[in-house]
Length: 117
Image (cartoon, rainbow, N blue to C red; front, side, top):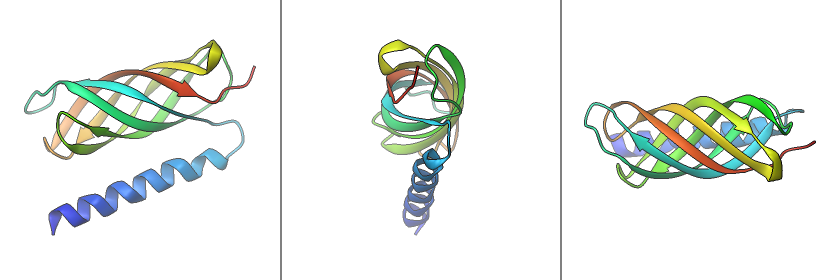
């Protein structure tokens, strides 16, 4: 029962994250994050999608996203900051909630973002 609730919550968060990209001036991206820390420290890769507060190149932005952590085998909603560079690349850091660890962990990542000049 708990697994179903978590799956539904993660699906709703992912849908909300992707639907907010329709707002003008937001950027959407996907990338790889390295997670670490938490109540039961487990480090490893996570793959996810993010929405950024701006879509302008060479700018800092706030981010909201959801990752799938391969180390924890669970979803990880997160909030953070990123630098949107040239060539549609972002570098970021975030704080997320690990459903597997039942606590907060950290992440550093990079990936593709749809930016404008």
